[in-house]
Length: 449
Image 1 (cartoon, rainbow, N blue to C red):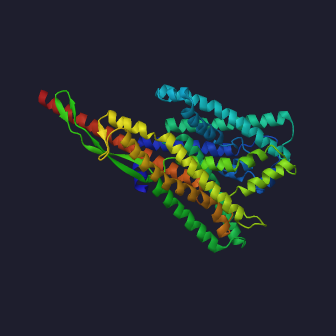
Image 2 (image 1 turned 45 degrees about the vertical axis):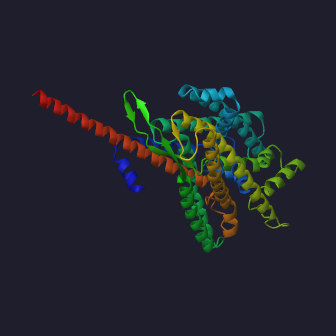
């Protein structure tokens, strides 16, 4: 990978694109230190120590701890994108827009931005309610409105930065904004773990186990992300003009992990739904206490003083079932086996041993079901590591062992490297065409002379 990166940096255009990405990252870090007005930071620290907002703080790169203007990070846009993908399947008008090509995708993208603004406002109001109830934000409509406006503007600013990376940089800009938000948090957690080891609060054997799990998780994610099931496809011979073209053969790749991190996000959203509702009810009230207890019992790895690890085990089983369900659900949205079979039949291709049409669709559905099961079990297992590893190793200061964060980081790195390889190949191909053109020109000149 280092050799490929070195080869990419030697290309001037790619080097400029990488420099542009680094400049955007610097702007992100600068915005990370621009605080919102009127926040009681001592009360904010106590609120974060309670664990209520730690997950959101990790994804924002510590912006929530500082209560920066980008405290909501890009989370509203992620939720809006997932919502629009589901609505595209459910609403025929949106599905028709998606099939219109680039113009239709632009319309859907505009709708996604509108939904992002709405979700940012809703999340901002809920967050401000939590801050007011805990004394971190002064009460009042003006104070809440100002804070919500700043948070919403910060989210849309990050969305704009991501679009600039996509247009002028390399890779998917939104993914890279999430990536830098996660990576910024890692040094602080490493330093916190080192201090805990020095003070004797964390066992050194536990740190070794955490590091081993961290490296094993990366290897497993790479292996499963690149894993595909190749379905052989035979192409029939065609007559083009007066010539007969050879058929040949290829393969249809079915990815083991088709759904990516979407099922994990769905499952976590459902299990954290009581915690989301608890933001609108102050602590000490009957509803607030019930929601707090429900949040604890729905957290994998939770240990109740009365029942031990039983609640954590039950929550882990529920989480696994949700991940399995959403993996199959999202894969069914992404892969329409009947449509794939019809396209193969339309272009004169077939899978050896299966007739075109319905038999081919049934075979693809059978293979996809088996492959998706392996991917779903992997997603559930890698996601549960982030809950159980701190409990089993007694190292609660490092939360990047498995889980959604590590899935996103590894996925973005691999996606960016593939984009750079494509850029290098394209530049090399352009150079080859140019050189061949120069040779042809010289040959013509020689013949003319």
